[in-house]
Image 1 (cartoon, one colour):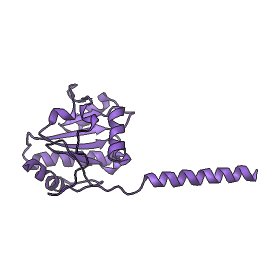
Image 2 (image 1 turned 120 degrees about the vertical axis):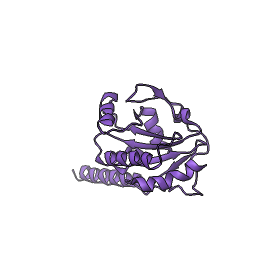
Image 3 (image 1 turned 30 degrees about the horizontal axis):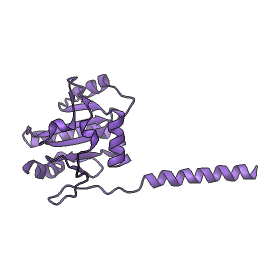
Image 4 (image 1 turned 45 degrees about the vertical axis):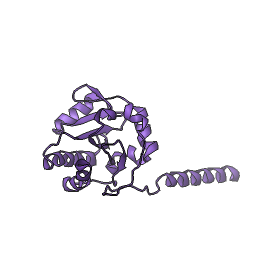
Length: 189
């Protein structure tokens, strides 16, 4: 019996240690004029088709080559995501709705569907691309950048620049003014 108890305690300790190891701080990049590029080659997930929940049309990240893409991982149930969505809308207004800034909100909750996402986006007046992330896209986000990209309350966002390079933003909600300061250098290139 003591051996069984010891094995359970050891197993519990091992699970806690491995869980905490996955939560180590991730170096995120705040885009600056000398921002470090996360990907120097185009990731495979850029070719994977996504379906815009509002229009039903398919698109890929590669469809926006030469433009700046602001991507947010989100979920319908996430209150931070709604707040961040309002800031993204305000960002587009602050910048005068530039044609070369594309916003994409990827729902990374596999329990949510296109119909619910469409209702969410239209209900809040969000008029950019909303898509449910296919498993392979979600897996790529988690593996290439950080598992925290699958945790919507952290407000994970990234920028894909005109050359297809990915730049990670700090976790946490970002107001429209902060997003403007981050995005403008990429738009100017």
